[in-house]
Every structure is written in C-alpha cells, then in structure tokens.
Image (cartoon, rainbow, N blue to C red; front, side):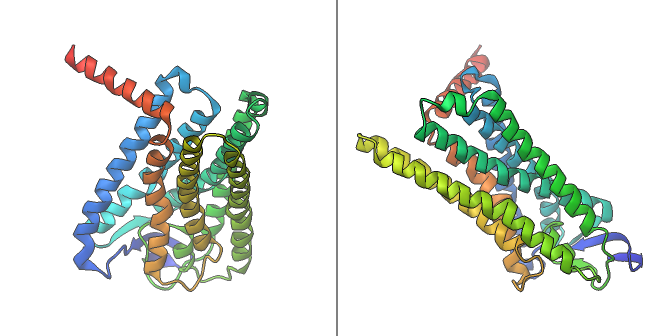
Length: 314
C-alpha cells in the first residue's frame, strides 16, 4: 500500500494465491472457464425469461433477478481475480477497491433477501396453491424485489463508507483475491470494535435470519410433499428441494463464516476458499439447480434453441 500519511491511501496490493506460484496458471485456466460458464448460464436465463411470455410469473421473475445478481457478482470480482492470478500479484487503486467492495456487498445482501423471498414464493405455491395468486400478486412481488435491492444498496453504502473511513497502516498487501471487508479491515490501524459489533449484528439479520426462514419454509414444503399421493412426484419434489437447499446452504454458510467475525482467526487461504464458495461456486451452480430440474425452463430453453437453429438455417 502506497500512502502519503496514515490515512491517505493511493493503492493496495492484492496477493491472491501468491503462496502457491506453481498453481497460478492452472487456477487461472479453471477460473476463466468457470467465469465464462457462469456468465453464459445466467445470461441465457435472463434472456429466455425476457422473451418467453409464459415465464412472466413471480417464480421466474425472482429467478431472473437472481441471475442478474449472480452475473453481477461474477463481473464485479472475476476480472480482477483473473488479473491477480495471471501476474501473481497486482495493485488496485483506493477508489477501485471501494467500488469493488461496494458492488460485492450490494449483490451479497440483495441475494440474501431475494433467496428468502424465493423460498416464501415456493412455500405459498406448494402449501397454499388455491390462495397463491392472492398471496403472491404483482404488488407483493414488486415489494419483495424492491426491498431486496434497496436493502443491498443501503447496507453497501453504510458498510463500505465506514470501512474506508478508517486510517490504514502497516503491511502493504491485501492477502486476498479481491477487496472484501474482512481482509481490508485487517489493514486498518484504528479501533474497529464498534464496526465488528455492527458486522456481527448485520450478519445475524441479513444472513442467519433469512436462512432460518428459508429452512422453516422448506420444512413446511417437505411436509406438504409427504402428503402427495404419487411417489414419482414426491421423489422429484424431494430432489428439487434438496438441490435448492444445497445451493442456499453453501451461500449462507460461507457468507456467515466470513462476516460473523470480520477479524476471525481463520488462515488467509481458508478465507479465500470461503469467499470463492459464495462468489464463484453458487453463481455457477444456481443456473443449473434452478433450471435443469424445471420443466417449464427446459421447454423454454429448447424453444429458444430451435428458434436460433431455424434462424441460422434460414
């Protein structure tokens, strides 16, 4: 970190996986492939839901918002991460670090609330099918989506501004792949006790509470599934719920471990892996989990593909 005085920072240095130089090239290739697959998968979902009128229902519009978030997550982080991996270590400006953290928090917080809204939507559809059009009407859908996005912007504004208001001193490097709150906070030379209380409380409200509500929703859904008369329908529903819960657990679990204790005793490499789970793995898995087991999405995907083939043939 180049600095003129204790609180005037020009730039930070990101170390990435510089402790494992022999793995840098392999990791670059793997992450590049995963990044491209994530972008393509989420972009296809966004386009298909936009074009297919039959998918303009709350369930699929929630999914479209999730894909926008996952695509934004990857776009905010992966290009910088690939640069770090390609040249071993790299610098990022103070303002660049601020912007990256800001968008990372917007996407993370918004997705926490959006996943909760999606679980509530599935609960209403499966447990109260006759009342579903009233429970999840357009007004309720818009309020849930707006609440998710506004919460993300509000938390990002408060948290990022607070972090970068601290004076920075000490070592010049951020031992991480990108500008995330915990590793940046380690470079501050001020008392961060109040911020850590805020981070702990915020993590409980933003991550733990929605996760518990999602679990309760899926427990109710599972009880409703058990009452289904057909075994095949029951098995399919169980499979869908299990895959959804796997994705949700990976996202909330890694996020809570990262933010419950911003200055925790985890090793830097462990923190990097935990960050990759919710910034790289879940955006990659979500298009597969939420589309491949959905007959409507598969039908729309095939229709979209045939339309492309017909256009090229013509």
